[in-house]
Image (cartoon, rainbow, N blue to C red; front, side, top):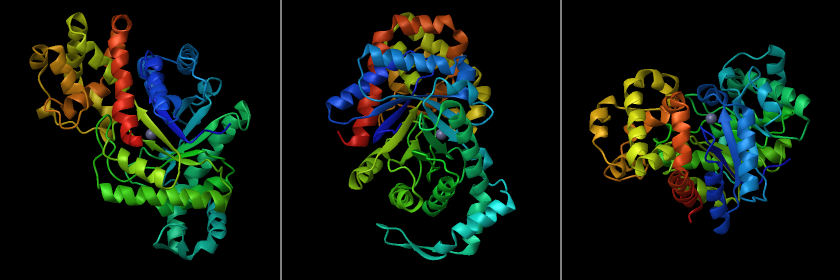
Amino acid sequence: MKIGKFSFGIGDRFGHQGKAQLSALIKAKGAGIDIIPVWNKSNREHGIVGTSPEDVRQEADESVSNLEWKGEYYVDADHINLSNVDPYIEHSNFFTIDVADYISEPADPNKKNLFLEHNKKYIGDLRIPGISKTYRITEELLSEIADKYLFATQKASEIYQHIAHKKGEGKFIPEVSMDEVEEPQSPVELFFILGALAKEELPLQTIAPKFTGRFNKGVDYEGDLSQFEQEFEEDLLVIDFAIKEFGLPGNLKLSVHSGSDKFSIYPVIGRLIKKYDKGIHVKTAGTTWLEEIIGLAAAEGEALALAKKIYRTAFEKQEALCAPYAAVIDIHPGELPSPDTVDAWNGVKYADTLRHIPGHPDYNANFRQLIHVGYKVASDLGDEYYRNLEKYAEIIGQNVEENIFDRHIKRLFNL
Ligand SMILES: [Zn+2]
């Protein structure tokens, strides 16, 4: 099983938008870009929404058969580890092996010595084809990289072997993710991480490093765009070199866990993957659920009233809702409208405040981020929420499709 060149991770918290998401990719196909859908859902989300890995598989299969999608598609066990992967094994065929928690844990001294021995030949000036600068590799640097990442690569391999043993080698796409950390991995660190993963015989097809800058949930990128561009370009060339040097799968590509809506880096990524003819996996994560709220608001009447109720509850519970996401959101409480103010809005005003149109006078990133982390509120409403999703499926579906195609795919592929 080998994943194709372009793929999108499409999260869908409540599992009702599979067809609308897929129809955005069908639209892209019509515009000449083949993008593989990957339905992803993390363990944390399953826990909060009360769904199971089997539900995601069912949603994917149903959407694909309903819309007669003939291409490949995947179901991603997102950010799993050894303690929670088992319920996913039967239903998933893409595994995001998350080893962020193991970074900086000490590796076995013998393993570290082996790592230093294997990489001794790179000491000196390392040149990577296509990159004009040289990397100065010293024994100290190798030792530091080992102390930071070697244990994590061994854990990745342990999790991979566990899945492969149960599911069968070659029956799934392995990804390794290290993105949920504060400190980014540099291109040279990425090179040696890939080498260590190859030594562990983990045939990874996608890798999700932490890139420079802030990737807050559901809002745009914050950081130094030119530094991002330079490192992203180096990462692409490092991967190319690592494939040849370490014998990793030829389709190995970068995976950008975007947290959604990184509009300002999309054109940079798009330009560079075009320049080097590379693939990419982009997780657009959970903003599909925000399109549900936008659709409900735009439907006015009882649906708008429900959207307002969700905001009021999220506003009241903001501390608890934000806590698990503290590292990936940035809300200024003083810029949140009061629930009484929101209650006076019409559907257009509510939708325009929530919808991510950079520069739109009504767009409020604080409002958007709070609702984004507030999906537990909708989940707690249970049937009341699901009933409305079904009743207003058409207007919601239009918003979901437009979001993925117009705001994500068009920017990434310069359509
Ligand atoms: Zn991630």
